[in-house]
Image (cartoon, helix red, strand yellow):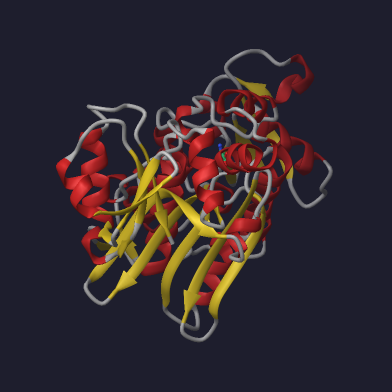
Length: 379
Ligand code: HSE
């Protein structure tokens, strides 16, 4: 297998190191914007060199962002090259286009590192679908926010300090807003739900509320309820349709998600035959993510051509199908919030069970009055 790597940042650098130790694949080119003397003559800055080289059968993308990653993905697959990517934004945004293009051109399109870093999540989702229908996908899909919440619970650390440390450790996205506002998780949720349910949801189908406004008083409120605050993604196939959303949750302390520390992820599916199965491990970072990109290459080498699912039914989520109580901390006066509140909890209140769609819509509007508003689902 002759590979061209696009991008040589944290993840790309890991891919390079792992491939260079193998004898079943060779990394011929590394596309870089700026010269990297250590790459020698493997470094190129013209993508056409890769496209025009018939020896290259597989392109591994570790650049991030939508453009030019999308243009490169399309050009590579049209030129008959397999495409492996760690870029969840690219896959979530252009899901249908990329999967269709791979099929039309008879090439493999794999993105295992895009969800869960080093966790074998998408490949096991693919595997369970051979035998059973998946009724839900859920869990902790972002290392940075888990690292922050864990440190806030364990050390009473401040949000800003822990975020800076997560960035230093290479967990956070280039723009950490994608982590703390939940967009990174939204993309992973879209990909997971699409694969699990054989549908095509867009990012707009998965409302998100992040942890930007969380304070130590919210952590204390969770603990007063015997719970731990975690950032969770949910995709559920329900009798009336699909619910999909991302929000901070106060999880009961005995639940597996509550015990997940540092930058680790825990992602689960549920099926009738298996019940809930959880996949746990390093959800971010250089070597775990690079490892899964190389695993995708090995799968291709051993003959894998298909995507993780064959189902691509256009769909939309309906989050009125799901409801649970919420913890809400809001500084203003709000008649609706007073009506749905059942009791106070620290500086916030606990509501009666509310449809997820209603809570997210209210919070979006209420943030205009109080940018420091925070809520968490009681699940
Ligand atoms: N910023 C992401 C995270 C990287 O923290 O999980 C892996 O997608």
